[in-house]
Length: 144
Image (cartoon, rainbow, N blue to C red; front, side, top):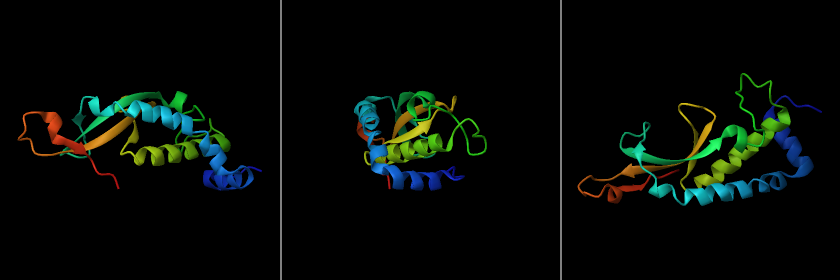
């Protein structure tokens, strides 16, 4: 039985198979991303366009085509290349990654030049610039 809405499909699929069983399969990938994140504080900081008083550091993870479960790029208005099951898996994957990374003040963003590029980022507030050593003036940007 095909459902029109991805979230309805996730709910139905969860009742049949258990969402935890499915999302647990994402843990290895999250662990690999978190291992890469250990080096993010040593990356070169650059201006955060959304926060004029802040900076961000990022690490390139790869293409959405090789990272997400469906391996496809689609939008809400142009999605004929993806099945409801693939879209549901992608939604579960994004939710799982956002939650797991958010607990460590990390986020995922798409690249500016290529929307298929996926970056791991950490945002920082910049403190006083009185100290000559710029590294000393950066602290974690609070995430709510």
